[in-house]
Length: 373
Image (cartoon, rainbow, N blue to C red):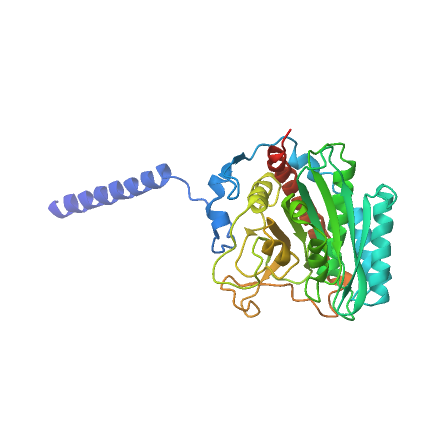
């Protein structure tokens, strides 16, 4: 009888314990399996994300608020991928290699001028200018289209891309993608119906691959006062990514030196890009401002004190990321015969263009606060 009683007692205790465990499981917070996401080390740009709603410009000390005078999202939605695909095809398949001194370089210049004329820019009205110069003993030219401001002393915002390539490549990623993005951005800004209180210049540089000769020449034409009017320079280089299986990352680099142990410092463009990144549906991509991805036309601009940033795609590939602990590498196809129309993700160029247009819209709000009535 005693054994039976003890056995019954043990059974009751076991049941009570099981009940307690069951109750705890029922009342505990549900476990949510979040999808895994690529995590990269954050630069100061990312660390300051929560502070991006108000900051000071280093050279003036004036507070600039991230207001939205116009809708960055609405402006970015005007981007048309059909136009981008058309330019990519023309530059890669119709024209082909565009290295300095080649027929393709001349053909690219003619194509860009024709497209800008279609948008209403003209040499007669001086809204379209060809800047001829010599690079390594070879004649070429930059092409600059401008939307003037009512105030001739107003600040200038420049958006640029180089159209030349290395020898013998179509250069779909480097940099037909940038030209296609820039032409579409020019169309959107020109036709959006919005007014801006500053001058906008769309600059198509030549001879970037030879040492930023086009960018240097553009700056050499400016006197000290004209240079001081340059409030921001958006550079678009490798605005598309390849169709390989690499992990792709949106990069906004403000550093004018190609190497260095420290991340790039944030400026008005990168901070505006942070907000654009939050406004647009870009959640699947990282926004990153790394230390040594500045081998672009921003080099001479940064040297001359102009706030600049290069918008590009990078791949995560530690084996190819020389001097870059973050694993960020240029697209694998760059400067090879595989940099062709077949190997570029056209959708990524459209996405980048929307990102640039939205970032420009936010920068515009800052620049207009600098305008003296």
